[in-house]
Length: 152
Length: 157
Image 1 (tube, helix red, strand yellow):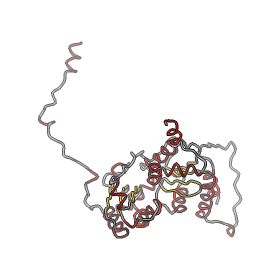
Image 2: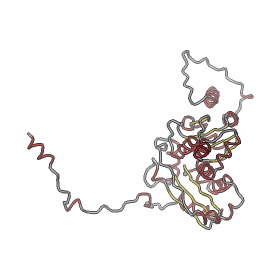
Image 3: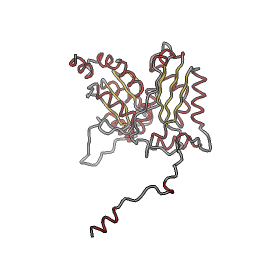
Image 4: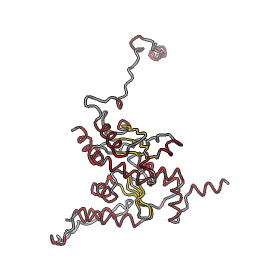
């Protein structure tokens, strides 16, 4: 009986040729899909037109949330613009919200914003990280409607 | 109409209160059309009262005990770090009218939303920056709330 157990438990060699094929580097959030990245493009264009940034980063963070692959629903933007000089944080964020009013009322469900002046960016050139998702988008009717709007 | 009255009552009810009726609900008489306020106006009025009722008010997804969103959780954690325990938290996932209403009320498209002393502060990003640069400690100070982080710093000196 013990011999039979040991037979089952013996280590199997993992150096089989079929297992050594390297998996392709698959990053679904970077795969633009057949329709490109229309929402990301729109965000980039509108922020550029409205705020004339010296530096702009638009990150699609949808893959970090409970939405289907290829979604464009959750974004993080970093905008560095002299237009923010003299504006409080909330005023800066409102400028960004205003520029993206259409996207925010249709397909974009979450927008994390960093709005810096060129001086602030120069002294601290870092992009904040979004907190881990807690699954709230799953089964959320509002998010589902927004995803449907994004696909049209 | 009844559902509007109930919706307004639901918003005013504290989040922790669980209330079950032992007897069937007596139907509320229908209000004449001329004196009827739109549901949206009712909600805006209710929200105006909600943000004034408590010094610190947050609109989040989920509850402080069980947040349903990473950004909402970040707001809860920041308040916890500062030792702010006495605040009102409204779960927008419970009520779609509340969820839409607060976005219109604040003219702010996303959740979470933070109100301090009846004034809209912003969302998670702004609260985080205020926490990092010390502005949040000052804001809490103005309300007579001494941040736990200040106390901890004083003790360590």
